[in-house]
Image (cartoon, rainbow, N blue to C red):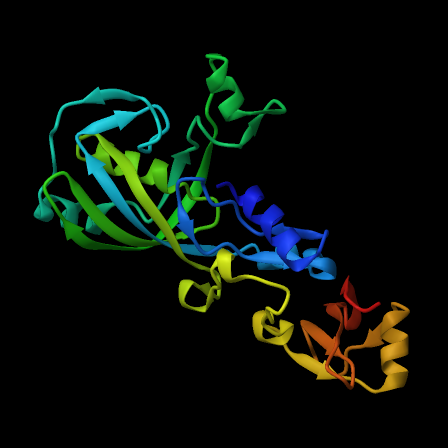
Length: 268
């Protein structure tokens, strides 16, 4: 199941056409996928988490075309790392580095997705981008596999990270399983299973999701907010979420040279 499949299923279950997700989860992975509906799809950039947490299991001793177990095996030698070698690797691995994007991904080069180049057997220069590895913890080591937990910056490919772990040890590593356990403030423990989702689901309150000040306004100020008017920033907000008397989200305003201006309009 792809992230788009999840969106389509949720759309039917909730009876909502305007719906999207805030960060693709590979089809062979599971875990947290944050969905936004209706007017809240405007908050996609704000809720596109700056960091994500994963638990991954690695198969040692082989390499595939896709860097995971869904791909074709292109090299296999059965060599494995010891627990001590893995612990030392995690201690010494760079916290920031330029990561090469996997060939089998939806990243675009010259207007075409990388996996399209792969399917056509066309050569393409794989882009690199700086990623940050904020935490790594070794959880378990078995004969041919090991499991680790990591917190990484947005845009980090765990398949590529695993490949890079292997290259540091001159070994072949391939991702076997992957679970996203957290995306920003959204955790697996707080998530609802897709099969349990229905129209009765009550989503979190916006003020509990956005880490910004809130202000409940009177009817006159509500009218002015809905008209997109500017305000003097007397309280020194950098940004603020305005709510109506009934606590309905109206808009997010940001400071611009001492003036509060509309950033995202949420009211009708």
